Amino acid sequence: MAESSGGSKKLLWVMIILVLLSSAGAAAAIYLVLDQRNSSDSGEAQQQTVELTPPVFTRIEPLTVNLADDRYGSRLLYTGITLRVGNEQSKTIIEEHMPQVRSRLLILLSGKQANELTSTEGKEELAQAIISRLNVPLTENQPPLDLREVLFTEFIVQ
Image (cartoon, rainbow, N blue to C red; front, top):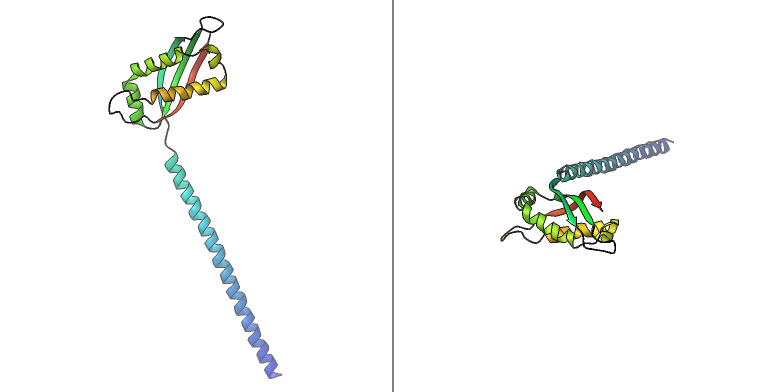
């Protein structure tokens, strides 16, 4: 009987050691998972703070344009435009060359018909046409403009 009680004591110690080792392994795994979560959360927070740069806008005074004749005769467009640009350099270039910018916009808008501009799709196409027209360099050796979006702040077709 002494042998069987000694063997059961050894078995008891082996089981206690196995339980402790498995508990330590589980604790280590949980620690690694939580540590990995925290590091990815802090990494995302750092990325979000880097990406939160304020937008840069430049306003163009409202334009009134005679539209191309359609079946209703002569029509007018009154529109206010604000450009969202990617950097201060693009804003400065646009503001320094505002007469050229307004001239290009007047030429572009006066070639449109009222029925092209009254739908949402027509306004979106016009916004893309404005970006294309303004991306043509205004002066020699001009760095490319970073035009992000055309915003219509006023838009009346009459």
